[in-house]
Length: 170
Picture 1: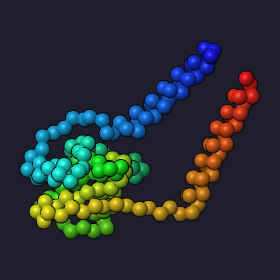
Picture 2 (picture 1 turned 30 degrees about the vertical axis):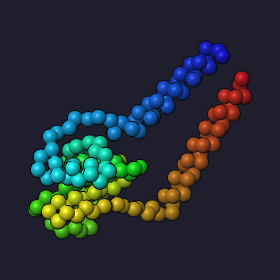
Picture 3 (picture 1 turned 90 degrees about the vertical axis):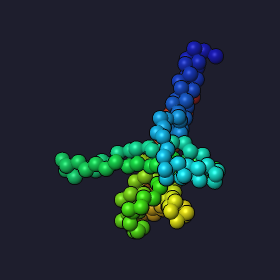
């Protein structure tokens, strides 16, 4: 093996390591805040029902821009949990929360799924002893699906062409 091959292997390994680390960085150990009251009861219920708590009181910020005006909203998940292959953001219900509506799902829960890259939201109502699983499905128009397919096919062909050129030069 020549030194160019060794460098190519090292660069390849480094790229695989960086991609894997970025994919799983959200599940690493983070700072945790003490759990009190309803959060403690919710964490006990989650652990009793085989959910593994990955994070506690996680925050993200949503920012929307309308021309030069910025609109900000703080997104907070009480817990990020995993059960099997699925991850969830958990929200513990407050006494002052209103009824479930489509607007509430769009404004409060769907951004949690996007911000924390989870499969859904668990909404825990400790007073009524109920847990609701919230999931979202977005159906894209056909032209978007075809654009994605064409884009990925072009990248694959470009990669195959680069590999052929690289191997041809040897």
